[in-house]
Amino acid sequence: MKLCRLGAPGAERPGVLLADGSHVDVTLFGESYGERFFESDGPRRLAAWMSAHPEDCPAVAPGERLGPCIERPCKIIGIGRNYRAHAAEVGAEAPSEPILFMKAASALSGPYDDVLLPPGSAHTDWEVELGVVIGRAARHVSRERALEHVAGYALFNDYSERSFQRERSGQWTKGKSADSFAPLGPYLVTDDVDPTAVELWLGVNGVERQRAWTHQMIFDVPALVAYVSGFMTLLPGDVLATGTPEGVGSAAKPPVFLRAGDVVEFGATGLGTARQRVREWSPS
Image 1 (cartoon, rainbow, N blue to C red):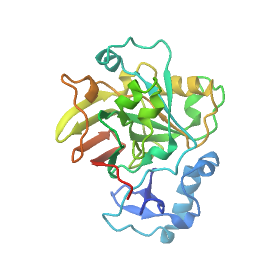
Image 2: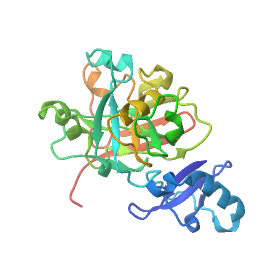
Image 3: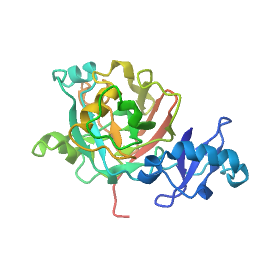
Image 4: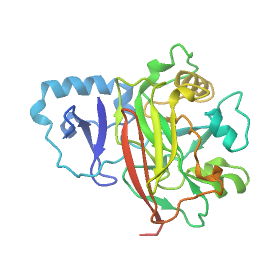
C-alpha cells in the first residue's frame, strides 16, 4: 500500500494512493497513521477494510495538499555519514559504528510544503535520504529480525543549518530541528520495497546535486534498526533517517547553500517525488 495524508496542515486526513494514480480518502476507517495504527497491524487492517467498504473510500480532488505521510512521530533518529563518498567529501573517515543524532519531531513537514530558513540561517543545506518508519516496537532486536519491525519506507530530506550544527557547541540537533526541516513522503510504502535497491536523487534550481543507490550505504536498514534499538526503544511510527549520499551543498567547491526563492526537487525509486520552495521564516 501507499499511505498518504491529505488536507491543510494540522487537519490532514488519511488517504491511499491507488494503482491508477488517484487518491482516496479513508477517514471512515476511523484511524490515522500514528503509533496506535502501526502497533496494531494497521496497514493489513486498512487493506481489508478498503476491500470490504469501497463505497466508503471517496475519491480526492486533484491538487489537494499532501502532508507528511504519517502523524508526528515520537522521535526522528538520524544517521550521519552512512555513505563512504559522503564521509569523504566532508573530510571524515567512514564510521566504524553508526553515528546517531536526534531531529525534533516538530520539524516534520509535507513533501510540497515550503522550506523555512530559520532566523540567522546562513548555511542551510539539503540531504535526500531513505526514511524508515517503524511498525512494531523494537528493543534490542537482532539484525536477522530487524525488518519484522519495519512498517515501510518513505522519501525524506534531512535539511540542516550547518552553522548551527557545526559552530554552536557541536550539537548536531541544533542544526537539524528547525520547523520544516523534516519533509516525509509523499507516501509511506508498506510493500514491494527492497531497501537495498532504492535510487535517491536531488536537484536545486534544476541542477542535479545528488544521485546514489541505497546499496551504497555503509550500514544497511537491518543493521541500523538493530543498532539503534540497542540504545533506545524504537516505537511504532518512529522515523529512522538512514543518511545521505555525496553531493551536499557544504561540500561543493565553492560551497552552495539554500536561499529564499530556491526550488529543491528530490525523489526515490518507488517512493515518489517532492518539490519544495525555500523562503524565510516569519512569525505569520
